[in-house]
Image (cartoon, rainbow, N blue to C red; front, side, top):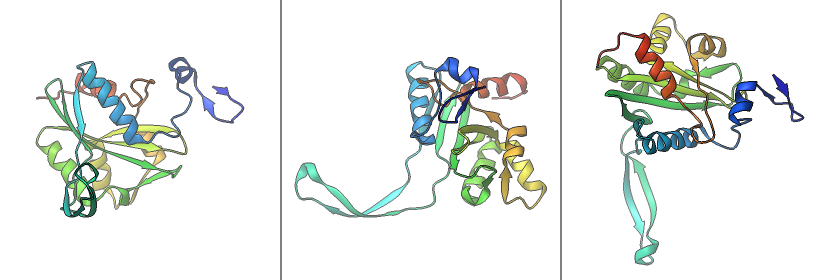
Length: 195
């Protein structure tokens, strides 16, 4: 590890990739930029799902200056991202936390967890990407590990120790800041995953 004057440690792999910090970039921005790179390279097709809203009132001062003044969520959204990679359906949720020691499960809504369980049951590769902003660490946790852990006990949070032991740290580059497909590749190779 190299200690920089800011006090932020950077490992040699990050240094060789030119990554010293993701501060200022949200997880969603990183995933969106990554998905654009995957699409451009014809590696995967993954998109952020729009939040379903009902527009109630629009102010039309002029044709090109229409402004939505009132809108409501139609219903609870499911997960953030959906796509396809080498014939496999992908479905995942992305969450961030400022906490250094745990991820509170209250941040993952019940309808989102139910959706993850349902798409997994129907054959999709389902997972959760969690970023610990204070630690500058991002992890991918597969649905089966998450569901098994939640079903074992009355779990209200995921400890950083559990996430580090079960999850996969997501690395990246400037062009692909959250390269989760590398982890999906490994998952497909080591499992007897059927399409």
